[in-house]
Length: 221
Ligand code: SAM
Image (tube, rainbow, N blue to C red; front, side, top):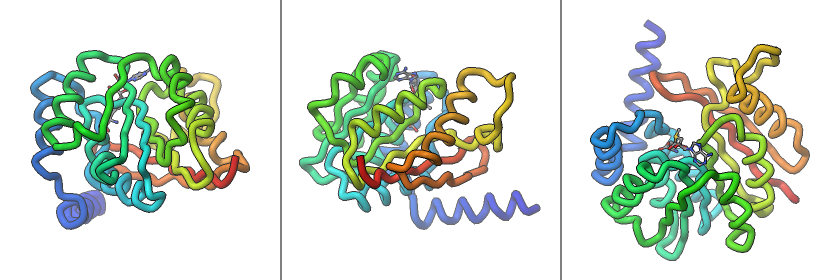
């Protein structure tokens, strides 16, 4: 019953504070049509990304892991018209869906999808930063390396957000039997907690298909 009540409250918050417009709904439909997995963030998290992008007056945003462009649309909508979002995606078929969904949502002019393994693409971005907000949501094993790059590509006041940092609490444990993805998440939480350059919190978010966000603000380099 408690779970049902919590679900109701989240639905109400989504409806009142984070309604999906036609562009966002179109991205979800395009993803289903293309047979992509439904592993995007939820509307409350999308709106939280917008709130954070607005808080740091983001003009340049970097996303690692585009899927179908759902989170990218939330982020791009928080940019001024001359702002820019670069999203990195390893799967060229996903990238095609993302480009179409960005255009359909009216944010094609301020967004760019780059195709490749993020760890290959990140070193090419050093002259394009600093990025005001970085959203990490790709392969979990590489999260510690993504954090290094995110800090390198940021400025004091930038916000670094990473998805899937709770995993039912497993992302805070230390055991010898974890797979590479879980180890990546555990290390990410530990690194962000201990790094004196960051102020960090994890927000658990336990509804049907979502996970928690790790949110870190860069204090200084
Ligand atoms: N951020 C998206 C959203 O909420 O709408 C969801 C991203 S989905 C969880 C992860 C994406 O990362 C997938 O599209 C996957 O193909 C991509 N990916 C996985 N490994 C990657 C890598 N090494 N470099 C870039 N993208 C990667």
